[in-house]
Image (cartoon, rainbow, N blue to C red; front, side):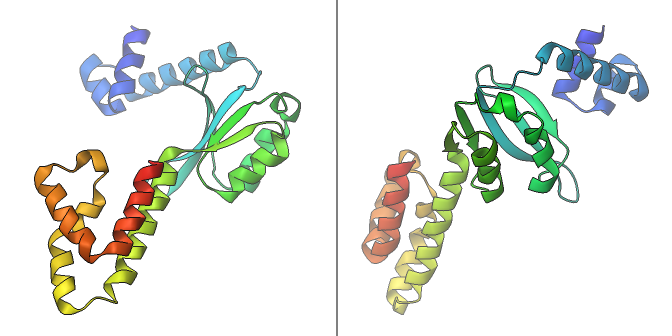
Length: 203
C-alpha cells in the first residue's frame, strides 16, 4: 500500500492522492517522510563522482532549493534548502574530503556555483547546462535584433516585423513556409541572422 501511495504522490498532489486512496494528508506525509529517510539511509555518504548542481523553485514567492544530483544513475543525491552560496557552502565544506574525488560537475552559469566547485572540487571538470547556455544565446539574438532595428528605415522594419518570429525557431523547426519568411527577414536583418546562425552552431 505504501509503495502505491508513493508512486501516486510522484504523479499528483497530496490532495489528489488523498482522494484516490481515502488516506488522510497527515498519513500520506508520514509515508513521504519515512520513504525519504529510507532513501537517505540507502544512499550512503559517498558523494557522486559525477555531480549536477541546479536550483529549483518549489513554492511561491521565489522559494528555491539547490538540488544535488548523482549523474551516474540520474537520481537526486540531496537537496539544500536554499540557493544562496553562504547557505549551501556548509554542505560542501563538510564533505570536502569526498569531493576531491569528483570528476565532473554540471551547473547553471552562476558564479556562486562555479566558486563552490572550484574551492571544493578542484579536480572536477566543469560543464554548464545546455539549457542555460542556449538561454543566454537566445538573449544575445534578441538584443542584436533590438539594436539592429534601430538602424532600419521604415520599409525594412515592416519587412522584418512580418517574419521576426522566425528567429525564435531552431533550425530544425523551420518548415518550408517559415523558412522562406526567415530568408526574407535575414536579407533585411543581416546582423540578427548572423547572431542566430552562431546560436544554432552551438545548439
